[in-house]
Image (cartoon, rainbow, N blue to C red; front, side, top):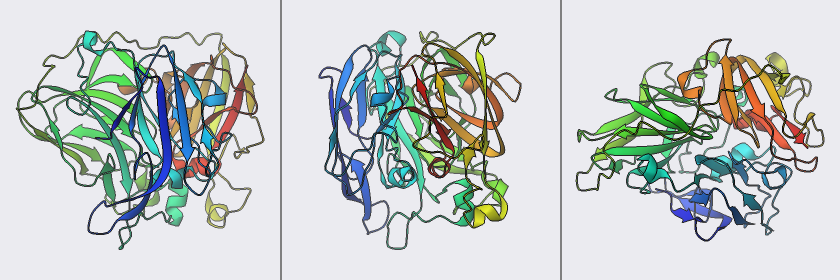
Length: 450
């Protein structure tokens, strides 16, 4: 488990981006980056209803940033591309949290370098806590029955270093590795009590979409989506999780049997004829994480809660301003030779750090229709949570009926968004594809709120 950095009482967090060495498999150590450790970062726990004073020092040799993905905070502390932290510098944002309890995360967001910096390890999980999990009847003992799982894929060179190279198909579709990492480890097993266990799942991969299931087909009980709890659990056989998305699920281990968390192969892979990454199969499953039941561990929760105290959005889009966004990809020879008029873009505009794409009045409600023709794209909006009104004109899939900040666009989706956080022109909010190679290559825009 990542170490827990609990700011519930102190209201303070200190992070340092640093170089390190990590042995993933075999005898060789890979050059890695992390926050407060060699690879990845600690799990941060912050209390909603109070501000958390955060200090981030950059001890690396290049600028980084720290975007608080999922936090509903003003643009000036959001940590996007406009807020780089220079080598040797320290950034001290104060994060005023007033949102519902949720599992968020943090990662570097320097334009043009996000994919590489996250690959090297600049990411971690952030828990927003309201202290009410006991009342909800939910597992809450960190690392015992409340387990944080960062899912990522990597490739390694023969010398054990992280392989950051991109083939031409991967430049188009996004990086896919041939090795699954869970919390930065290869080949680990999670040991769990003989009872209900909560899994906080983060897809921290650059491009891989996971379709998660348990090997014996026991259900995953969905408790929470990106931005908070549901009203009641939803029983799922499979859970699709795209880059940037989080989900909290309960798994019942009371029968004492071991089981493995598996995933189907990346659904985007087939669009390029299976040329991407070492996992070349177009169907079938691979193992993500085995679970071993230890009856000696305390099983604190044995019943599935019926009321989570959360909600599912049910907004009215009748009077909302309608905005249409097309996630556009370059094709053909323009892509192969990097022609500037054939770039990744949104509505034909590739990202420009100096260009504000639009302004939104604070407190306004908008309906966004987001479409993607070529492949599936995870779509993220900073500084907001939203309702998925429909997907391809139909009722949203069950796992998308909660509050979201990232959603997988497979064709088109209608989103209903309320804008309550301020964002000025010098620190605007981003909207972008969360396939990090697409984001770095221009499939991103920015807007102000005021």
